[in-house]
Amino acid sequence: MAHAPGIDRRRIRELTERELARFTVERPRSTELIGRARACMPQGVPNGWMTELFGHDPLWIDRGEGPYLIDVDGHRLLDTNIADTSMFCGHSPQPVVKAVSERIALGPQFLMPTEDAIVVAEELARRWALPKWRFTLSATTANTEAIRVARHLTGRPKLLMFEGKYHGHADEMLVTREDGALVPEMLGLLPSVTEQVRLVPFNELEAIERALAPGDVACLVTEPALTNVGVVMPDAGFHAELRRLTREAGTLLVIDETHTLICGPGGLVRIWGLEPDVVTLGKSIGAGVPIGAYGMTEAVSSALDPVADYGGGDFVPEVATGGTLFGNALQMASARAALTEVLTDEAYERASRLGGRLADGIESIAASHGLPWKAHRLGPRAGYAFDGRLPRDSAETHASHDADLYRLLRLWMVNRGVWEAMEWAGPAISVAASDADVDHYVETLAALVIGLVA
Ligand SMILES: Cc1ncc(COP(=O)(O)O)c(C=O)c1O
Image (cartoon, rainbow, N blue to C red; front, side):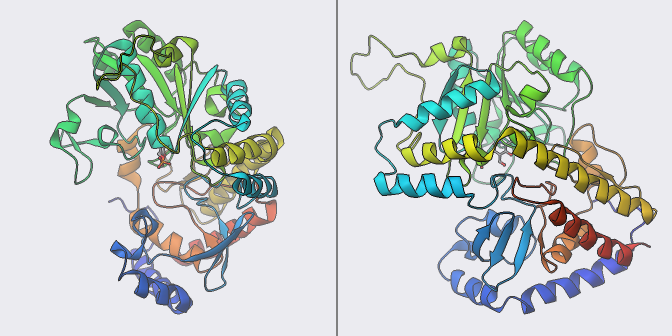
C-alpha cells in the first residue's frame, strides 16, 4: 500500500483510533442493532457489502431525505456515496414516491408487461441512440445477458475486459490477474472461470489488438472510463481505436454505463459520441428499485427474435435470458418517473457543476497545505489521487492508493455529517444536493487536512 506524500502517519493512526471510538460512542442504537443482528445474519448484515466496504461497523439507517441519510441514532449525513451511485436521484424524490406508491397499490408484478415499459424503453432509446431494450433486475444480470447474446451472435467463446474493471458479481466477470496469471477474484469460484476470459490494461491499444487477434472474442465489455479503481480516464483517441479494432475483429463492443450514466442523459456514450453495439445500465435509473437494462442495435436484437420452430423439447433454442421479476411493473413505474421527472437535462447539468465545485474544493484545500493531490473529475463525481497523478490504468491507481488515509477520511467525515464514498470510489453529488452541501463537505475535509500535514 502506498503512503500519500506529506501526511503525518502517526497522526493518521492517532486520529483513526479517536474517530473509531467516537463513531461507536455516538451510535448506541446502531451498536445495539449490530449486536442483535450478528446472531441472525453472517457479519450482522443482510449483504456483506454493507459492512465490508466501509471499514467500520455497519451504520444502521432510519431513512433518506433528498441528499441526506438519517441513521438510527438521529445523525443526519450528506450522502456522497449515494449507494455506489444507485441513489443519484437523491433519496425518495416525490415523483418516484408517487409513481411507486400508486403502482404497488395496483399490483407491482404480473409477469406481463405494463405500458410504463414502453415509455422507459423509448426514453432509453432516445438517450443512448440504441433502438431496442431488454430489462433485468441488476446491472450484473444485464451484463450477463449481453455476454450471452454476444456469444450466440458471434459463435465465439471469449470475453475481453480491462484490468481493474468491475461489471458485477457473475462468475466470469470475477477474474483478475495475479503474478501474471488469470485467477478467480474471490473464493467460491471455479478455477475454470478464467478459461474464456482475457484481461488487458486499460488504454493499452497494442495489448487489445493482440487479445483480439485470434478471432475468438465474442465481446469486449468496458466502462467508458473505469470507475471502480478511482477514476481511470481514456487517453485521447482511445475509444475511436477501440471501436475500430473491435469492428475489424468482428467483436461486439459492450459499454457498461451503470456508473457513468450519472454524467448526463445518455451517459458518456452520448457525451463522447461512442458507438457501442450494446449498452448496459442499472442502479440509478431505478431510483432505488432494482433494475438492469441493456440497449442494442437492430442487428444485435435479432439474436432475441422469437424462435419459430421450437418443438417443445428440453433444449430451448433461445439465448438464455429472463427471470421471474425482470421487467416487473414496479421497476418500470419507478424508472419512468426517475427518467422523465428526476433525471432531467437540468438536473444532470446541476449535479455535474456541483461535482466540479467539489473537485475544485478538494484540490484547493490540498494546494493550500502544500499537498500534491489531484481530484478526479467525472461529472457529478470527484475523488482523490493523493500522489497528484491521475492514473492511466488500474496498476497506477493501486500504486498511489493510501488505504489508511482513506479509512480515516471516511471516519472523520461520518462523525461530522458526511457519508463519504466507499474505498476505490469517490464522493459523488446527487441531483438533490446543493452548493451549501458541497461547501459543507469541503469545509469538513479542510479541518481534517489541517491536522494531518506532516
Ligand atoms: C460498472 C458496473 N457495472 C455493473 C455493476 C453491477 O451492479 P449491480 O451490483 O447493481 O448488479 C457495478 C456495480 O458496482 C458497476 O460498477
